[in-house]
Image 1: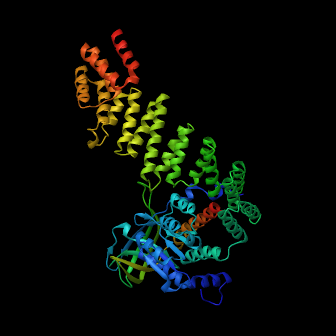
Image 2: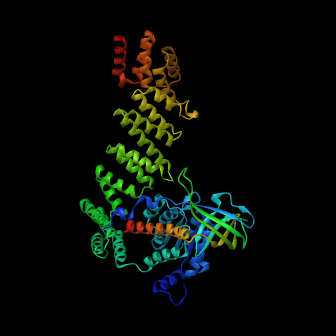
Image 3: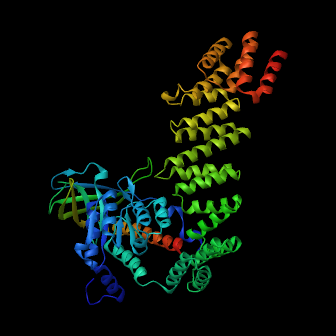
Length: 134
Length: 443
């Protein structure tokens, strides 16, 4: 028998909102508006970001801080800090660009924490879906 | 993909994708391009993939292309990606059955996940994603469509029989289906539906309950049971069921409105505050839901006033006024409740929350007159009352106050004229007007 408590726990579904802080070390500039930097894809030691145009260029050295947005007045929580090199850039139009960052320096444990955060949530959601649909 | 080590499932998936039309709807160009590349790698033809960045474009393309696979962001501009599915279900019900609908989103909130689950979509992928998660989720959903289980085939067969009105066959197909899976809640749901359509309510109830024994959060069984109980006007049990539904699926405004209605009908006033907390966490609150929650808070407030829990009542009224900002009807109900329980000072405080444009309406003027009656000087009250009556405002309370105040001020002629006027306008209240005259005179 499927018990509700096994597949449903409100805290499992608490919203995760990531805040990305992007700094271009080469040009000494940064993306100041937190909402305009988005983490789209996590690869094998690379990250795909969507940023405002002209944030960086190929082979620029960059720093990416990923934080979990705090609830209400709570502070954002650090998840991962990466130093890397821009591997590729692509103009997306509408003053946006896609940037693939090759991650050079970061804490392996933190990287895995980020992956687990989403993998666990994804698994919970799939379990919930399966139970709901039966 | 494409390597010699492909599993039979991967090969099947690749073959399936090669002939499918795919629509990807996401405001983020990077997300669109990321998912696009994954589909390409999995064997989809580039020419068959359409990318759009808005709800309107997605809707247009869905009508034009009739895609086999739709990948949509939950937050598609001001609209919800799930509305695409609803729209397709209405306009192209035949195509919807075979369409794969998957949400790819950064929204991990409980309300979004539950709403998507209610809509019966085929997958929910979180952003930021990994290639593997996207590939696996889409492949799994596709395989379920291409190669359904024996259980799924039986359910589909029964649904067809049910739609054609072959109730005996449908019942027996669903009954057989219950033996084809270890968690046959869906088969029990459809068995219950068949019984419900045949108006064998108790047996329908039995089937839904049996489904829920296998799976306590089976959405269809819960909703089926709830609708059955409502049709039987069994409000107490219906409330217990819908309470469970809204606990697991809190996002549906329509259902929250039903829960609130039943909570009031069943006198579960304490629960209303819990639902208010759920309401506060819902991102997309529509007008109906706001009205329902405000009304429920006011009804509860009234209940607490009658139970002498004034502070609690005021808390609820404050929440209602804040939630229904500027909604005159809600404020009017609050002020009236406070006036009815002689909490004049508090009523006056809520009067200040009325938007300026509504402060010239008869309703507002009447309520502020009632507040004035308890706090103001008698001659000012009489002057204000006369002003309202000469403006054509006709209200029983206004006349009651004016008769009483005129007698107190020894304005006998005016009191008599007001009494006659009141009886003419409100003949059913003649007795009450007479009682006021008698009471004031004896005092």
